Image 1 (cartoon, rainbow, N blue to C red):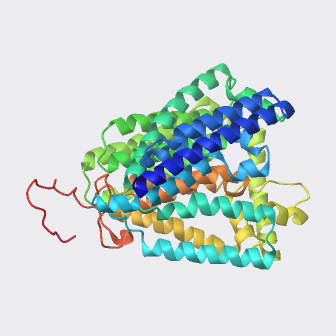
Image 2 (cartoon, rainbow, N blue to C red; image 1 turned 45 degrees about the vertical axis):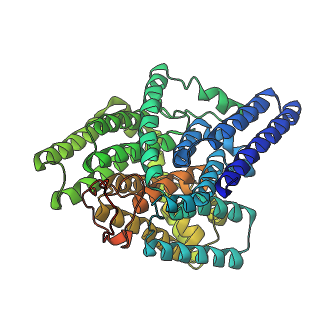
Image 3 (tube, rainbow, N blue to C red; image 1 turned 45 degrees about the horizontal axis):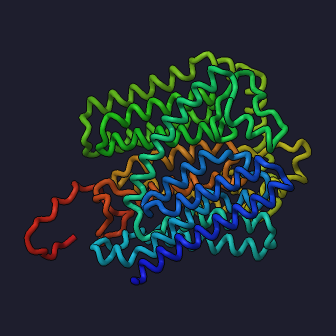
Length: 482
């Protein structure tokens, strides 16, 4: 029996044992908590066993599906589930199987794909700064839990040996999931009720979700802002793939994702769509592209017209003119002053990972939510942490532009534009996976390489998009410079 076979047997056997244990725990919990929880845990164990048998390159796509299917509010039952979420477990499984299979891939002529030295430097510096804060401010449980989720979902994901196939599968799954979710949200909006996930939300939360002047669809993601972020990223991926040489079918996915954004009635998501589309189009105006200048101009006008039409829709006009929308805007303006005072109180060095709300409490008698991921990071990780995360994001965007990876560029821009206006980074640890996927696509996608992997010797940050290599001939193999 080969080592690879032993590794697979151990993984499958361990998964089966874990499934049996989870079912036993579910039976025990069912007598205490109730039958619905027991059924949910049992189904989760079965689903995880099925995921364990998936090909390695489909595991990130499976993690995305798990993230979308498992209601976000259900993960807030306790701190452990919120940190070690089902989607995080799938990502960890991908790491294990990817590293375990790297030796076999090398034998098959697929060496590990290169990771930019700049990404390595920025990640190491960020980890060192987080470690300093944990030691200096004290290793609080909240800080440790957030750090674990952030490292696993957002940083470690950049260093898997083989990511090319997984990225393509992830993007495809992203688009089909957005299309399905958009159809569901359309039905939800027409019905004026989330007829599936409302019942799940009621099991774990007594707080009514819909308190706005208009109905806002949210699908399975528990809140319109999270749904709007997902749809904005899906739009950017589809739009970027079209500029990277994909077919017109990507424009259909972009249109469906735009519909999803409309149904969430999220102003920040509409802005993210416009910014992402603009950032994707701009490099294509000054560099060679598979699209004609006329078609590029047509797409630009189409996006501008679409965004304008969305803002003129009755739902958006009603929300823009409502008192609660004005109150939300006023609260976000007040949050800036609160964040500056709090950050200064900690000498601009940070109060510790995920400690923004706690640190701001003495200066926040009205318990205003810090509705900006960047202000959260400023308070928690200080100016050094904010700068390092900004450089990691900007470096990924620059690398994506140079490599012609416009889907990854769009994803990272859409996430960052959205994150400026709500508290995603610290308030929902499972949702960190979206940032991780955006960073993965920005830093590691390369449309100029075959899906089987990469054999580039140069740093990916300086790699420029090139035509696909010629198919290998059937004759003797010869050495070719790269």
